[in-house]
Image (cartoon, rainbow, N blue to C red):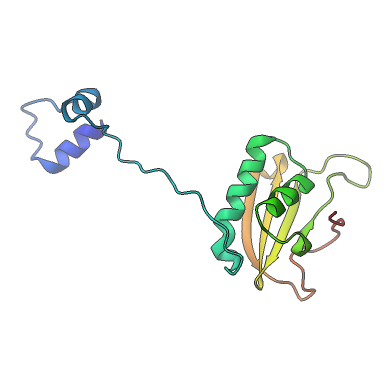
Amino acid sequence: MLAFAVSCGLTACSGASPAPSPSSAATATGTSTSTSTPTPVPTFDPKGTASQNRGFFDHINESTIAANPSPSAEQFVNALAAAGFDKSAMQMTADTTTVNLKPGSVQFSVLINGGCLIGQFGQDIGGYHSMVASVLSTGKCLIGDTVPIK
């Protein structure tokens, strides 16, 4: 179908002869008809802003989820620290509630160069989400109770 659409865009699409199928186009030219290029893996810039590092933040967190479909906040924090983020600039919420139940989601953050990278993961919120936010007046990224990071 893609070969037909490309063929139609390049010719008048007279309909007189059928467009080659993707397999015959690949055989005829010796190359694949796929035009997608691999997405480059984001990199960490310790001097960059939170916005500039969000792609890398997401990449690390998505890799953490791929390795363990139900990671704890501490696992996110440890993976981010191993990737180069400053662990002392992080916050996280508890992995259990006050009545020892698993929360609907966990949050974790990194304060970086005057901005906040905030991640949240859990089934109650539909998986993983992230955002860039301003630093709070407290100098932190998360509101409410957080737990000490080891």
